[in-house]
Length: 234
Image 1 (cartoon, rainbow, N blue to C red):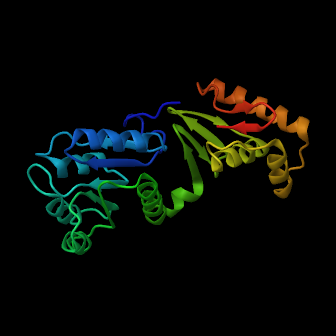
Image 2 (spheres, helix red, strand yellow):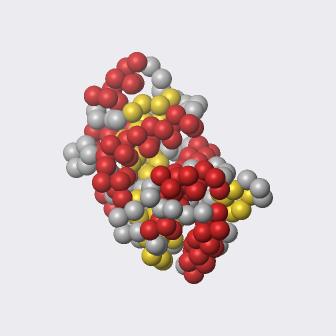
């Protein structure tokens, strides 16, 4: 299931991250990384109207380089703070203490130097999003292009939605929280029992099949994969 570049971000309620980076290779690497981790991305191409693009796109978070064509990252950060509290992470090759101090003084939320560690960058992004949008964190979980809504017990995919039963929601919640990992049938059954959903091995299979049918109905096929003698994964 490939991540999209930026289309459909609002309809799927995915977090939208703007990348203000003039090196096309680095910008492409960041987009690939973020798309693969469930984020929608916008890569700035026109550096003559960055502020206007931010106001038009209203991203949830901004990755900002310092050395840019036209206005540098410090000047842009200062201007952004006149109209928005959007989280800003400086991702830059400028690595002096003064650079980091300036980023903080002008309103930046984090400072990461290149070459960046992808795990640290993703952790910082997740932390800032959780802090900036606490209600949204509680209500939904995103994996790739699929959005699981806990409050409404539903799942969205590419603008289409399907309602879920209590059992189906709990099963998908467990798989989403362990995204990419193999979840054994025993662990899943134990988790469901702990949440007062008393299912056995056969009932779990029935629920998994029903979920697959529902997801296929909105175009999300092969989302839940069976690993022979191991369990399930997404």
